[in-house]
Structures are given as C-alpha cells and as structure tokens.
Length: 259
Image 1 (tube, one colour):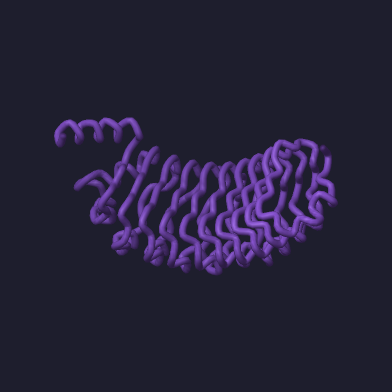
Image 2 (spheres, one colour):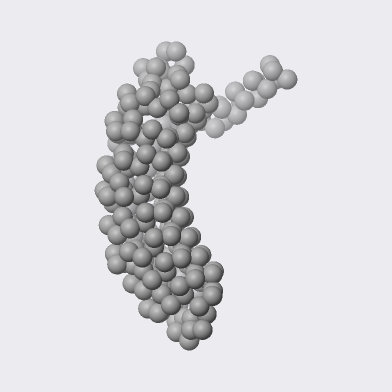
C-alpha cells in the first residue's frame, strides 16, 4: 500500500485508536487526518518513506498518545501540526535518524506529561520547554549530537523523572537543575563528557533515586565519602553508581549479609 485512502477516514468520527505500521511505501498521511476528532491514540511505525506528518494533525484535539517509531525518512514535524494537541499526554519518537530537531510548536503541548526521544540525531531540544508545565517525565536515549539540555526545562517544576542515556556530546548537567524542585529520580549513563554534578543538586531534598553508570570520571567523583561530588549526593536515599555488573555484585553481597 503506497497511500492511506482518504475514504478510510470518513464516517469514523468515533474512532479512538489508529495504528499505521509496516507500510514501507507510504510517503504521506492524508491531510484529512484531522477529521478523526475523537482519536485518542495514534501510532506510526516502520514506514520507511514517510517524510513528514500532515498539518491536519492539529485538529486532533482529543489525542492523548502519539508514538512515532522507525520512520527513517522523516526530516521534520509540522510546526502548525502541534497547535491543537492540547490533550496530548504522552509523546514518544524513536529511530528517526533524519530528524535533527523538534518543532518550536512543542510549546503548545501544555498537557504533555511524558516525553521520550530515542535514537535521534537531535542537535538540540526546543528552548521553550517552559510551556510544558505538566511534564513529569523526560527520557533522552542515544542522541549522539545533543550538546545541551533546553534552558526552558528549569521552569518545569512538575518534572519528577529525568533520564539521559548515551549522549556522548552532552557536556554537563546544568546548574539550574536546582530549580527542578519536584525531581524524584535522576539517571545518567554513557555520557562520558559529563564530569561533575552541579552544586544545586544537593538542594533537591525530594530526590530519592540517583543512577550513574558508564561515566568514569563522574563515577569516581561520586564515590562514597571520598568523592569530590559526594556531598552533593549523600542525601539521596537510593544511589546506584558504577557499572551494572559492579552494582549487581553489590546487591548480591548486601542480600547475603542481610538475609
């Protein structure tokens, strides 16, 4: 199938879920996608020739979940397509290597709670994250070109979970992290250029979980009692610092000593 028939979408005003996957010849989705005003879930995946999404996306005002997976030809997401997604709570985009940025229109996603970006060549995330006031979880995985976190993120005071994995060009965890007053869990792995933690981390009294793996310099600085960054993390109840193999051995030893 090389296209999705427009008639397929007509007379389906009550449709709440649509999945378009494993259609390698589809290069576009119908502009009248927006007539599915009751749609709550949209998943698009493994569509090799799909290069963008229709601007009619903005009419999906009931959409709560949007997932885009393995669409290697997508080079951009429509700015205007984000405007009407006022109900979107979860947005995941994965394995779209031609996508180097997310639209500034992300600022319209004011109900967004969970954002996941994986295996993208993003140079940066939109700076206007301060509009995503409902955001509770941000996960960034394998974005090798990413060099910094968006400054606007510091204003998202509902953020509880921040995970950053395999971002080799990311230079630091910024000082403004101290403004993330609701942060409960922080995980960093395989980000070798991050060599120290910000002082403001010790101000986050609600931070309960910290995981640092495959970051050699950072791991050394967080060593118990002796590390230069130990005072910044000593207040955190659950800390996992070091490779998974080492941690696993520590867990086993702890279990054997405390049956």
